[in-house]
Each structure stands twice: as C-alpha cells, then as structure tokens.
Image: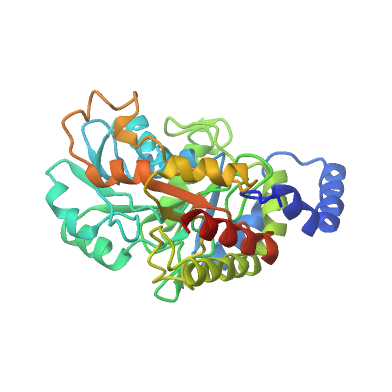
Length: 365
C-alpha cells in the first residue's frame, strides 16, 4: 500500500466541480489584479478568523516581512524568534535589516518557550515572533504578557495554523499582526504561492496594504518605499472555495492525530503532547525517534512517505552560521536529528493510517 505524505490531487478531486466551474467564471470575467474575488476572500477569511481586517500578499515570507516593516522595525533592531522553525521566520527579520534573536522551544510542544524569552530581551528588542508550529498554538497568554510588560510588538507566524484556536478564539488577531502563508501544502493552501496578514488595527492594515502596493494608497502617488506583493485573485478564489472545507478537513486531521496518539503510545517513539488535540489543526504530526534516518528509510521501503522538519536548524544554515557560531541551541539541534513527520493529510483513508501504525509497530517490535 502506498501512503503519500499529502495528496493534493485527491484534495483537488474532492472539490473539482466547484473549482472547475468557478475557474471558468474567473477567466471569462477577465479581472486579473485585485477586484471582487480578492475582496471576497479577504472579507471571508477575516470573518472566519474573527479578525477585523485581512490583506492579501504574495506569499508567507512577504506577510512576515511587510508586517515587520509596517511596525517600523529596521536596522539595528532585534526581533525574538524561535530557534526551531522554518527559516522564513528568520529571513523576514534579516530582510528588514534587523537581527533575529533565537529562543529555544519546549521539547514537548516544539514551540518557543515563554520562560526563556525575557532573558533574551535587550534595549534593542522591538518584537517577538511566536510561531504556531505544526498547527499547535503557541502559549500566547504568556507571550503577550511579556510583550506588554516590555513594550514589544507581537507578530504571529501562523503559516501552519489555519483554523487553529487559542482558548476558544481562532488564531488571527491575538497579536498586533498575524502572518499567513497559503503555500499549496498548508491546511488552507492555494494552487501556487500566496499569503495574507490579519489584524484588528485599522492603521496597521492600511500600512500593510500600502507597502504591498508599491508604497501607494492612490495610483501614481507613492508615500513610502513599498513593493509589489499582492494575492492573485485567481488564488483568492481557489482559497475561498477551500475555506468552506477547512473546518471539515481540520477535523479529519484531528481524527488521524487522535488515532496516532492512541495506537502509537507504546512504541519506541516520542509523540506530541496532544494537549491541544482539538484547538490545534495538526498541520504536521511530528514524532521524535532515535536513529530517525534509519526509521525513515524503513518507512520509505514500505511506501510510506515521511518528511523531516527541519534537517538543518536556521542557526546552522550557511546564511547564519558565522553570526551564530557561539550560540548554544541544543534543543533545536536535537530536534533536527530526531524529528520525523508522519502522513496526516485530510484525504488519507483510514486503512492507510492503519497501515502506517502497523508498519511502525512492526519496526519497533
């Protein structure tokens, strides 16, 4: 039996009639920049999240970078970031001219450890970027309290958390700004690149849109140095279709996660803590395993596709290695050698999930 990590073809087939019909409608309309399709998605997504404003941008990295620039963060400033995350979180800070300051995660949840944040704050610190990693909400109460006490901005990286909640409120407006990616493999993924920023702050929303539109609020009048970063209306239309399925698809992910947590509890791997089974959206199901690479090869031979998130931590990448050579980030380095993500796509069949469990138990027995 073949078990794909994520079956985007099956996802498309599930919504094919509406996608094909609406795409034909879009092509006939002939409006390819901005317009009603983009406006509709921005309104629907912000309403879904319980945020006041949504601004579409070109991709998730732009969402983070433009958010930081809208807050006035630049050269000489410091931004606290998780040491264990996809490198885009760091790149956004560097691209603004600021300096990323890594803080280690809790090994139980993989997200930034709030108890370690305050010791990383200096007079140059301007913001904290918590990442809702793998679809698990970060500990926002503690992070927001630290930020308020120290007069810092909070920019949430929600690239893996579409539909997740924190204490019964959807992720999307807890912090000053929330950055989203709609990369195809996300819980809410486009048919290409895409991103957005959500917020409850009108002035910040205006700044985000201005920066992403060449620094212009009115055509040919450019008030700030901006860029071209807009969400394509065709992608917005596709996202609008998928948005109607998001809760259902996230519930399917939760059912798979629950099955893994129950039936793999006694094998030789460390499972996620599962404390936020229903609030999280299980973008990934990461496990920790000794001899991770050997296990991955075994699963590959049994036609079970797994991925490693992330094999090289940001501070070990050539882009940052010289700057962070003296940093002791043992937890993120350990995670990079042990973490393996199991299949958990919403289109997985139950017999495929059972097969993954069977093969894992066979390996460890």
